[in-house]
Length: 366
Ligand SMILES: NC(=O)c1ccc[n+]([C@@H]2O[C@H](COP(=O)([O-])OP(=O)(O)OC[C@H]3O[C@@H](n4cnc5c(N)ncnc54)[C@H](OP(=O)(O)O)[C@@H]3O)[C@@H](O)[C@H]2O)c1
Image 1 (cartoon, protein in one colour):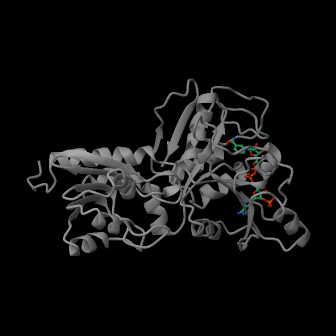
Image 2 (tube, protein in one colour; image 1 turned 120 degrees about the vertical axis):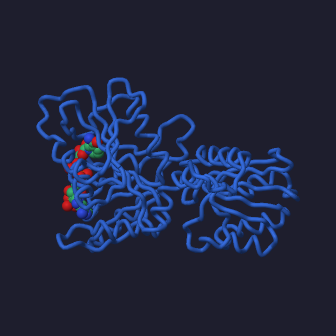
Image 3 (cartoon, protein in one colour; image 1 turned 30 degrees about the horizontal axis):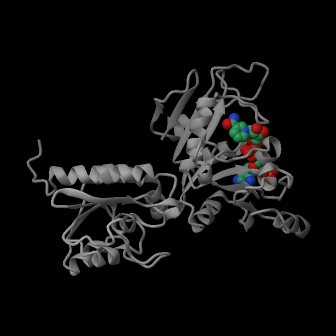
């Protein structure tokens, strides 16, 4: 047992745990902003609480303090993440804490955004606000896995996903391989990530919707990113014709003006030219950097076998989900065995995800 004195009390831990829960609930809803939880206490009682709201506005501190008209004299504020010190789309949250006359701020971990990183503690202390950090930092760090990875590496956190039959067959043309429970988990992954990356081949062969179709969460469907080197995507696909069209970004490398102008006219489409690699494919590393530059920090990849396989070989996935059906499709020839071999080689850990999927199985590689 460690005899090192813990500077935080049991009450501090309780309040920070509540803040962590408040943050967790917002996962998937806050866009490019990290989901933060905030608890405001005074005389050992919670006087307000808040979290980062839809699309990141307002921030957690403002959400909580606004509820008490920014009157928080003598209070202690618990935050899962360092309060921002920079002017972004909103003024710095440290100003709101000062304006509200809080007495003490305890936050869990530093914000990896360079504009704020490790600056809040000094700033708040200079304004005579007793500030400390590190409370339940291991637990809070897990919340910001994706965000921290993206900010540190300047590429998004990438999650892969593939479905196969019981006998490891890979099916083409939008055949339903897995059951409704597995599909719900897939939709949850779509909801939790800012963008979904696919290929023009999948759009053309499956005509997918690529939305999150979980009750009440439809508005949090991801931005659609399409790899389409030669601009071959079918302009009549659902994603372009649907009335509630989602934003789409097409990554290409072509000088064919006729094709460029045709794609330009499609609804809610942005086109981004990406350099070729040595094999005249789009350079996937550069592509990821471009995605990051658009403030997209988490991506779920739903491509076919070829691109998925390339991305595993290039070690571009941070985690991978393999859904396995209980059904066999004996007449199908193509299988995912080479992909599974690569997954086993490239990832240190694999686990069976303990969630109800009836007879389907979900394996997570990480
Ligand atoms: N079982 C599942 O979980 C699942 C999930 C999604 C889709 N699918 C199925 O998968 C099928 C499509 O699979 P697929 O293997 O044919 O296609 P894919 O892997 O989705 O895409 C292959 C295409 O991507 C392009 N490509 C490959 N490497 C690239 C790179 N480095 N940069 C840029 N472009 C690159 C090439 O386009 P060019 O032609 O321009 O060279 C290639 O033809 C669909 O029929 C769909 O039904 C299954």
